[in-house]
Image 1 (cartoon, rainbow, N blue to C red):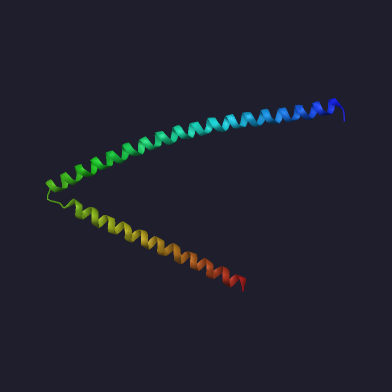
Image 2: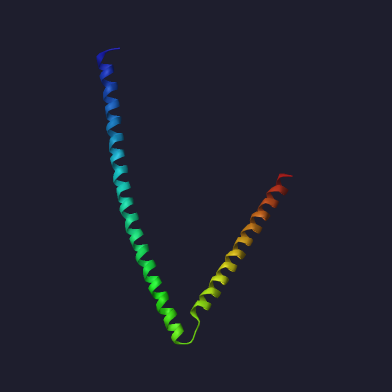
Length: 108
């Protein structure tokens, strides 16, 4: 094995190392960008959450002014939402059971 062959191998390794280094740099840039986006999103969510809280308080005050029990309405809405979620979960469970039964019948 001559020096030329060794030099070619070393050059090939060097080229691959350089390509990998560029990829690592690109990944670092993407990660930094994603971290910045995540921070921006977090700030936006906090701001929106705060605004929703303010709006809720305002609506409850308006409801009280109009003689409406806003807390009762919110409680009923939460119950309705929970019932809808339970129904959706039951339907999903039933669909999974039906698929399982169908695959069992096919296997027989």
